[in-house]
Image 1 (cartoon, chains in turn cyan, red):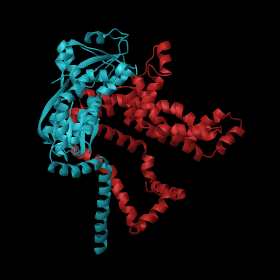
Image 2 (cartoon, chains in turn brown, red):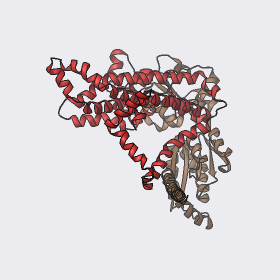
Image 3 (cartoon, chains in turn green, brown):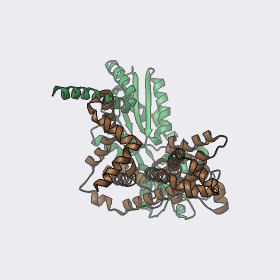
Image 4 (cartoon, helix red, strand yellow):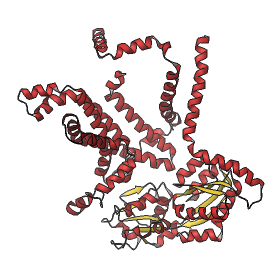
Length: 275
Length: 286
């Protein structure tokens, strides 16, 4: 009896070690969180202006350019702080946060994905809409196919890509199409806005329906064509401080910067609309 | 019946496997704990996620989720494309494996390394590479488009190409290994009897390495069935044309995790059925 019992005890030990190894593997991104937690607690004790530590911001992929600029501004205004970003599809970011990913701030590309986090009780306070984004048609440079309206995209000779209906940019595109009664058969439903745009940048597709900000960020690799139906499908971008934050003062300050006139200037400069 | 079993057991020890295994299991208490425990944890690590899929499956709504036209469309497309990719791999991969195993030429080592590259390359990178080569603006694809009006991205053919690119190395490696293990003297004997090299390949080598080809084909087929990265990068995602099961799973996960689990179950079931049915050999080989 003892003979079997002893190995079992050791079994548990080694199993525990194995589980710890797995946890270590899966949690390699949590290293900067622990540092922010440590320095965050010291910061909260002192006055509001003495921010320090790391702020981890999970933000929609479309915010990449403008938030990177805002992060640099923030670090400059508050020496000793560091802003780290995780840009990605809002859905997967939300899934990551509800799954316990260490983050202080979440900025999403749609209220629907924000709701995933608030419903799970992950947010501290109510999300605030800080910008809005409108759709635009991205065409090849110089617009060789003379695309001037949403209706032009129904030309069977054109290869058009849309975002999949499951992701925010696709849902918005579908809304605009439905509102105008246009039926459009794309060659592909891409999994996010950046990959839809990439297909045009690579000249594999002739046009894509993407956000205005993405057309702007792509520079002269694509040409943007505005269309009136996009007004029916404007996306609100909410931002919120997360409950599990390890650095509440810095998280608050970063959100304040995003909503401040200087922050809004950066965002509208990237093509976003004011809320 | 018993006689058949007896003969099976009799051939076993000749290969050296089963007898040694029997000796080891006989001394089961002798398996050192530092080996056994990591092994068991490793096994659990690989199997528990699959069990979790079964546990979390929405069994009640499963029939409804699985009988939807979209799922059947994706499954059908997956099966057709994986089979076509395997056929392409067989037609091109077996001769390539033969070349690598039987013909001495300068730079053979390098060629072999290049052939295995797609095995370790992230599939997305494979998709990007395919776009650069065969895309509408690619180095070959541009001519295809200009001269013949053929464009491969966003087509079912594109899916087959992406899958074959990722799956063919599995076949080549498997067949090459079998060829190296097979005795070339049979081919030499055929040659002395007046057979041309191609005839010897067709009549002697092919039958000799048939099991290796079969194993490689199954491996390639299974890999093609699960292909995601290169497909979504090169062929895009359109239901009925380029949306295979892995793509459908990924996109369903964004809005309807239950549907994603249900789709995953189908893929899991198909994969297990294939491995169990065709790789019978492997299962017994242990």
